[in-house]
Amino acid sequence: MTDLTSPDEILRFADFDLDPALARALTEAGFEKPTTIQQEAIPVGLEGRDILASAPTGTGKTLAFLLPALQYLIDFPRREPGFARALIMTPTRELAFQIFEQLQILTKHTTLNCGVITGGINYGSHKDTLEKNNDILVATPGRLIEYMNEESFQADEVEVLILDEADRMLDMGFVAEMDRIISDAKRRRQTMLFSATLEGVAIERFAKRALKEPVTVEAESPR
Ligand code: ADP
Ligand code: MG
View 1: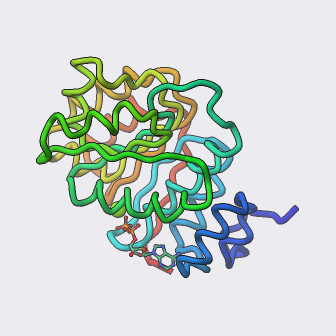
View 2 (view 1 turned 90 degrees about the vertical axis):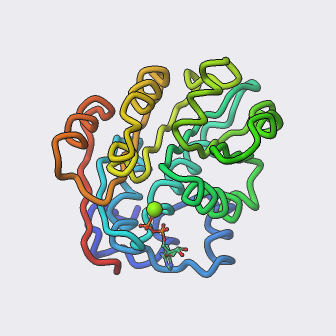
């Protein structure tokens, strides 16, 4: 087996031993060489460990958390219908749709379904998304909590929780919503927290509440 412990030795996505459906989607989308944060975070994520990651904007954090989550969902398929098994929280509608687009590209050759839930969209129009038993849901905190309060969504089946731009969600005042998610998703096996920075009392405290023995991954340069 290839030794994945040294990030320097990883040059291509093919070295990660991903499911062929994911590998094919990456190739078709033109992704060949993982960025630094991807080289460091993907092996840790594939082991199922919690991750505390920071890297500047534009360094490819989305693939760094999506690939381990998708590989897990493929390796351990759903046994019965239910709510989302992977939940990605992100601060804005724009970011949610960007992640959703990447998800659609990556899941093209799989049987996994993805949905997106954000504010700024007619409340009732999410009914289909919530009823469809999506494997993966991307959501902004405010609107998701509204659905949780009316029991249209339950987070207790979430196995993989991803907090994207966690620092920004905290800055925007979503701490109560984020705490609600981590407390409801209590049976999760893995949490990955991504942030532009890991400095500051709010992010440090939240990370302590959200993560179990996390591996810290920091990257400064994109490649
Ligand atoms: P971040 O979340 O760190 O700001 P994104 O995940 O949004 O960054 O990625 C930024 C851009 O880089 C996107 O257009 C994405 O498609 C592209 N990208 C990500 N990973 C790679 C890669 N390994 N090779 C080439 N382009 C990539
Ligand atoms: Mg991002």
